[in-house]
Length: 81
Image (cartoon, rainbow, N blue to C red; front, top):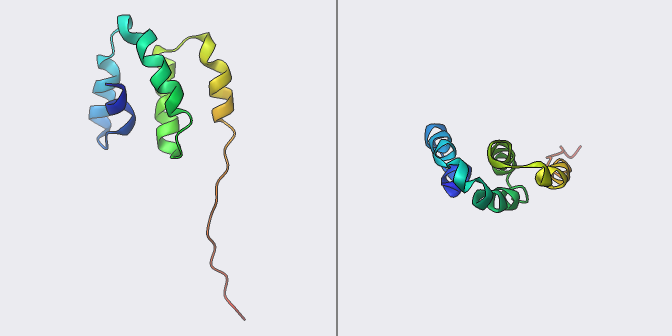
């Protein structure tokens, strides 16, 4: 369910997967969401943050803070005069 909530292309499926993680499974799901915070794709990092918001606890705060620091590379085409 964690994988679906992070990677499925359909937002309805992602939400259903997140909703399907029962409270008794929150502790087991947390490490997977923490791992998602280190993913290279911003959308996965954002989804992992949302998952932690649902299943996490205060111990996840340092990882959430670290995930706010990002580096982006862009290729810019410059005309040669």
